[in-house]
Image (cartoon, rainbow, N blue to C red; front, top):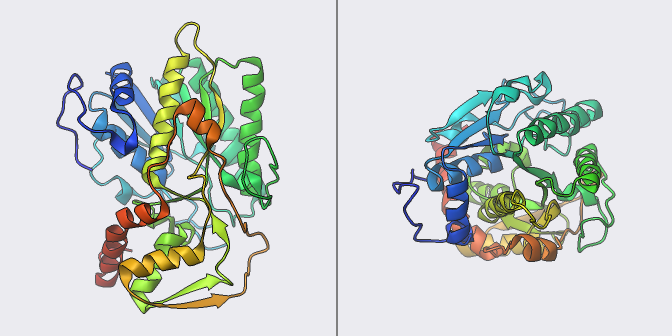
Length: 368
């Protein structure tokens, strides 16, 4: 993304990320000379938010807080942080390197009008329950209390992992039975928010349950990157991909641009709620497409772009594995105006050139 050349007073000639340009213009006016805080801003979704605000909100102060990588790994071999400086190449805002578990006292003195809380341990194979709860739930509550004292809008990342392996479609408030500590920690966040909103429904707090997000700037998620990226790279490298048998497991795959749009729409409704006599719209919302697609369908779409390749199926090695997720997005559509723009075919088409570029850079040693 390039920096926007328009001044805050100029009109936007398009609907960025599919968001009505009038919504963007109102939000830009509200955030003129104000600040946006993005935790986990060097990660996948956080960095996409950072560049969105840099481009479309040129008079807004954009602050990224991230733990960043320090070379440490979990026992499973995955890095303890998915935040990477290369996700922020070209970012011109402010950066704070901070582990959520170090305390957030520094935010007491920081002025911000909205916080997008993306920071978390999102690796679903991490088994350290205490660390997961402290990082994902307890630190979130600390941030939430700081933000509410500042009258800031809070938009935070929840997860489809809160539903565990219950039957689809997945409806907020029903069948919330997480099967791993990650999903449990996210549900704990949601439950805490529900308790707060039960007593104060006017507070602008929005939890977004992301389903299977894919798209640009996810490379540094490594083994936890989307199957779309992983399968694309496998196909390019060896003309062969590996899938858990029989490839008919279904997920609600949602493109990153639609996820950014959901965050911005929630923020916009939060601003509306700060007006007198406003209608409370806070709560927890699913962010997906509302459709389930199988891994085999991903393979078929990738073949359309990359040519034919072999598929090898192997037995499922995971004790917990969701077989079917599908977001009920009707409340999100009717309350927040969320309408996903990208089908799986459109999302992969938009993403495929970056997948090819990543593979080329890996082959030439320019990416690691």
